[in-house]
Amino acid sequence: MLRTSPARLLAITLSSACALALAAPAGAEDTAPATVPNGTFASPQVPSGSTWVSGIEGWTGEGYLASAARAGHPRGFQAATLNYASKRLSITTRLSDVRSGATVTLSWDDNPDTCVSAGTAGRPYTVTVAAGTAQPGAFTTNPATGKPNWYLGRSYSFTAAEDTPRVTFGSTDTTNVGCGFLIANVSAKQTAPTGPPPGASAAADPCAGDSADSPECKDVGKAKADIANCPATSRDCLSSVAGDGQQTNDGIAKQTTAVQDFNDIPRDESPDAAAQHLCPQSNALTDGLPPEYMVIPPSQWGQC
Image (spheres, rainbow, N blue to C red):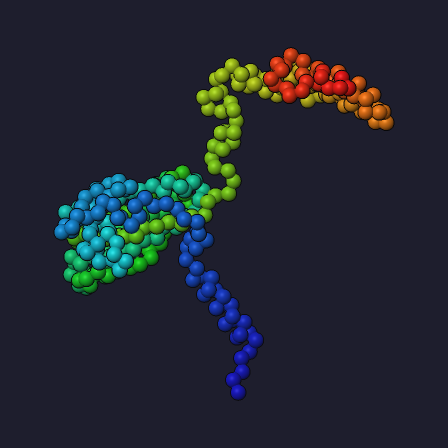
């Protein structure tokens, strides 16, 4: 009978747990979509009968697109080349809906292309994010086979150090510069940073930005400085800057009086007697209004 000691069983269990933890890809927590302009390289479309077209919509750099037939991608995408006419190329785009502090995972496919001989090693390139401390990602395509040999699902994760971070794919190939290799189907996911967007507090401040020089905001700024200079225990100093609140106190007193007057109206009087208390208030509210604003003015009510 096979016996397994508790210690051996625990070691196997822990080893399995570690293996599961290590298997999680970088950036697996990034689940919200992020926009990659023209990530499938569908625009411009390579004209019928042509193999290449220059320029990539939504991307900068000396970009060239291979037709879907030339690329041979299993999903029928056009593809961008990182080598062309014996030159190493780089193409750049910005992730417009990514804020500083977000974690981002880029995904894409690559192909050594069909122009290099079968058995040639993979083609090297980098993915770089401008700003911040993110290290460039170094990648190599599958080896050449003389036919399309796409790797589906490369990925690179980083933390954005700026809004709309700039991402660049660049060739580092030195052995087959005359033969282009391809990337396709670029997409991104993100986990947005917690807290309000940068500048949100400033946007909520009516005296932020250009408004800071208005007379009203200058007065507010001066008052804040004066209050800051007042000793916390000096009521006279604070009153000299912020006022004594007399206007507010007067308003509260008027409201208190109005409520008291309303509460003083007897509730056990006859309707006609009670109306005599209310008629002056009603007439005061409608005095000066033209007749067309009232169906029946209070002065014509029977009780008034």
